[in-house]
Amino acid sequence: MAHGTGALAQFIPSPPISSFHVGPLDIHFYALGYIIGITLAILITRRRWRALGGNPDLVNDIALWVVPAGIIGGRIYFDITTPGDIPHVWYGVFAVWTGGLGIWGGVALAAAVGAWRLHRLGITVGPFANAIAPALLVAQAVGRIGNYFNKELFGKPTTLPWGLEIPYQYRVAGGIPNQDLHFATFQPSFLYELIWDLALAAFLVWLGHHVRVKPWGLFALYVAGYSGYRIFEETIRIDSSEYFLGLRLNMFVAIALTVVGVVWFVIAQLRPERPYTVLPPGVPEAAGAAEAAEAIPDEAGDGTGDVASGQVAAVSPVAAEPGEPDEARGTTPRSDG
Image (cartoon, rainbow, N blue to C red; front, side, top):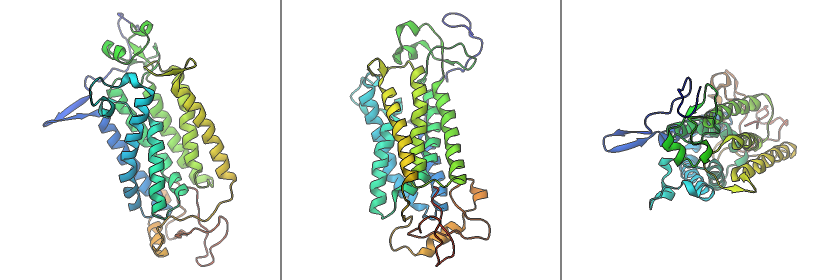
């Protein structure tokens, strides 16, 4: 594969459009990707939360709060860390449909709002965080497809067969260094992240099914795993970014959050486990058991429950200490998220 004015042999072509019209509406693939990703995250979390004995409808309630918070937090983070990419129109700081949501800002504000809502409902946050962790990665992976249609989030020039073609006007708009403008194909870092997100989501599900991960543990690994990948990604990205001490600003964020995530996971695993609630106060215990009784791990494949055909899992508004049989039910609850 040649670059610049030479003939291109093999590459990933850029899509010819970034949106389509439905009547008077202009539907952007970037926004559509996030809508699909959020929908999948809700469906996955409902199934995982149900397997823990919680009411899956709670996920819909939480989504009504955290989705807007995530979009707002993500846009605020983007505007602060990448001001040069804000469209030069009066509504530029709000124009999420043109691209520009910072994952870390979105997750931070969404997590804070979600935790507040769960506390208001009398539900322990840690188990819910474990349930949602893989779903967040799936949503992020689908959202990266929108970056492909926006011709953004690409890396250094490459001659690899899977190099991504970026038209000249997008190279200029992307703020890449002048010395790289004559190249035609670049590292598809959005694709690398998509693959990593799905692989990490699968690993978290597998781990939760095979290892007793305490509340907050899977979410901590999500933070560490995603941020650890971003350390690599920040070394290959050349699109516009704010710099500090010669490095992209997000590199420092990635390093810090990787360390925080690892330490958080270790603390969560070493800390004595306490009883937790998955149902609001006043909800009959049988309601939780009935919800859990319908969740079959072999069918769900999400590693969040111990319910097998003909066997009802032990789920209670207040779970017993791990390893201590609940004499009232003769079973022991799980908390592996």
